[in-house]
Image 1 (cartoon, helix red, strand yellow):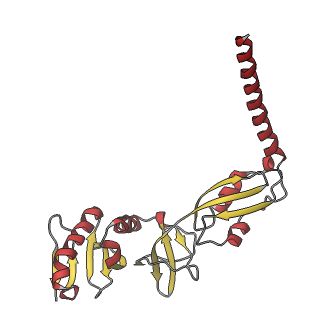
Image 2 (cartoon, rainbow, N blue to C red; image 1 turned 135 degrees about the vertical axis):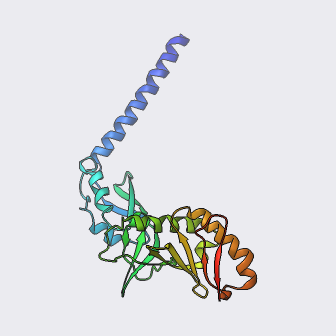
Image 3 (spheres, helix red, strand yellow; image 1 turned 30 degrees about the vertical axis):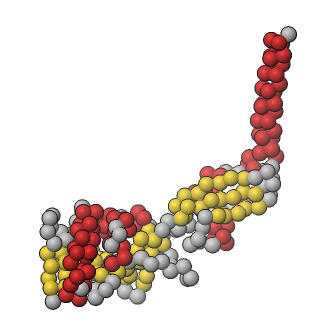
Amino acid sequence: MQRWSSLFWLFLSVALIGAGVYAGIYLEKNTVIQEVRFQGNSFTDDSTLAAAIESPVGMLADSVHYGSLAESLKEVPYVKDVSMNMNIRGTLTFTVEERDPIAMLIDGTRRIYVGEGGVKLPIIQGNIQNVPLLYGFSVSSAGDTLSSDNFRQIEAFLTEAKTNRVGWITISEVAWSEREGVIALTYENGVKLIFGRDNFREKLQNWEAFYTNVVAGKGIHQFNSVDLRFEGQVVTQQI
């Protein structure tokens, strides 16, 4: 008797699970999308994102090509990635992961942000970012990508600078020099810092140590340039 009781409850559990799965599939296939929402976006407003896709409102959930919608949204410059979910009321929500600017590219009178991977990003009024100014590359149009070896050196430097306690707060401008590699100017007094090529983490650590132990005592105004290209030493030109 006990064996039959156990089998009955097992059968009932399986049946309920199956009914739940069927109900979920039925719900998805018969749910009409009533509304589209966006979240996670700060650089790009909802209207810009909505204009980038063909609205799925009024369509059955299982007839929508979600991959195509996501790819369309990724064509918006600031959009790095997209995930989606839909509730039982038919609200389709896009969660947007945006790119962060790492520098503001200056080309004559033209300016544009640059994000990870060299993606050019438009400057949005009212959303100005505190990032270093970058010189030596063409602005051209938003959506283009900087992909030269020279820019990859700049990007590697800026990526390391963002994680350095002193680097990010002391550097105001960055540029590329064929002779000297990555060069930068300090916020205070515009002292030239020469970082060269590669090994930027170590060089920034050397700059942090030099700034903390020497500049803090003598004052930044005592220096004209600081060359950090050489392993184990810092070469300075004083005023």
